[in-house]
Length: 260
Length: 309
Ligand SMILES: Nc1ncnc2c1ncn2[C@@H]1O[C@H](COP(=O)(O)OP(=O)(O)OP(=O)(O)O)[C@@H](O)[C@H]1O
Ligand SMILES: [Mg+2]
Image (cartoon, rainbow over all chains, first blue to last red; front, side, top):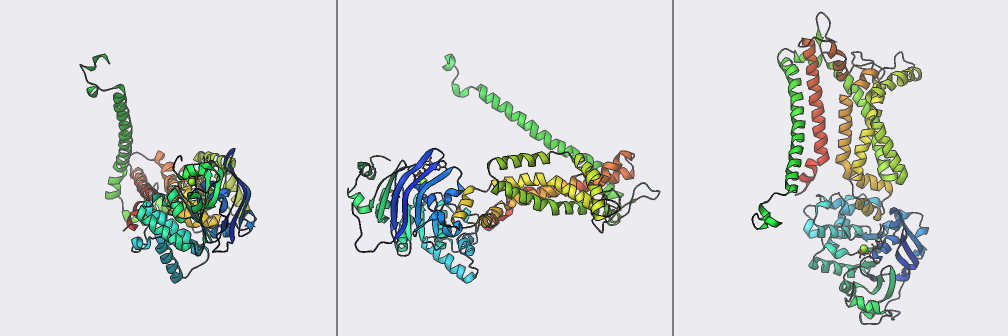
């Protein structure tokens, strides 16, 4: 396994230690341990029910909203266990999330994107205007909606709502961006545009990208983890995994489309 | 399927087809009879009161005179005081019921979990089922002496008493409807807002309440309608004296209570009888408008359509 990328010095953003996630008696993730470094895109691939979404939910303590979901083990964010954050809202505001099914809040497009800055206390209209335009542009949506920023975000098409949620996550000015199958409702051309944006964003923040599309992970991720039925099968440099440097034959099977 | 050759299946009506038709017919009869019944009631009320209302009644006096003396030698039929009575009691009731019911709905819908939530919901529904005469009884026998004691006033049957009673009466049903409106807000909205780092209150005030707005307004309007049309409890708790109230401790008389108390003693077809029907038409129209408004709000009518370009 390739260990270090020699060109950049790697700072640890997330350290996952023995993370186990359960729903009642069902184990969704079984004692996984790995690290995510700053300014990388970390891909997570795996078939349905492998625990990918559950993992993301544990990162910003969304599990506290889900009854029956328990998390054991440690998630360190910038070296501090997320459970030691007294102010869970401050933690969440530093982590942007894009859900697999787009949730355009029933507010105007503008307010959808301005909500998080407003929660941070930004009131100046000019400042909000700038943030809204910038985030919508980055999410490849601005041109389509610039004439109707006042209409309801929940009335946009599925793909547009998906990009709206990306813009909304970016409006948090997050340090960590969690993307859960973001391209599920987005057409291929737009997906490519967003992928380019993600590559740029990597300079500023850390991205965890859950994807059902193995090739998308290959295009974007610096390192990739393979989850299977709640088990962390493999973590490594993406290119190495795809060129066959794997510890477990199931990884190659999955990457080559033999199951899942 | 022995006779398949003789009679192709496509031309045969199965038992399920007939069942379907019969069920359709029954439902249609049910629906039509409800409409016919409502029309019949409306026509009856209109027949008894409308002609008089338009022809013989001095409308200016009817609406602007505070004097309601239907049985004196020179009868006066002014309903201003009765309208003031109804309005003041309903207004006070809403001042009490709106914050209580919205608060209860938010607690039940957003904060309470598991057992607490179930128990609370059952209790609220139980409260909504208390007959109005029992509320009137509470007004007479508990609130009345309480108000006299606490505020040191000669009578405790007043706007205050009836308003509180009516507020308590309307709150449970308003709570139930408001809670339904909150429940209809998809969890995804809450989750998305929480993921942005919003606190529970921010989620409720910035996302949940705005998106449940139509249902909440409908809940309030239905409460208003309930207060407006309530008769028995109001009859018992207001003191039933014709009066334009200047303080919450004044006794008043409501439109509904007037009809209930006086209709039995009037000769059918007499002016007094017909004036009471005119009041009935008024009530009918007002509750009709309120219900229509509630309906429009439930559907979220204009707002959403108007905004899309
Ligand atoms: N709210 C929940 N309650 C109970 N069990 C759940 C819940 N959410 C997920 N699970 C279970 O946890 C396991 C992992 O689910 P998870 O959503 O993390 O999978 P996933 O890898 O994201 O799958 P997909 O690719 O289909 O999104 C599954 O067995 C699922 O049934
Ligand atoms: Mg998932």
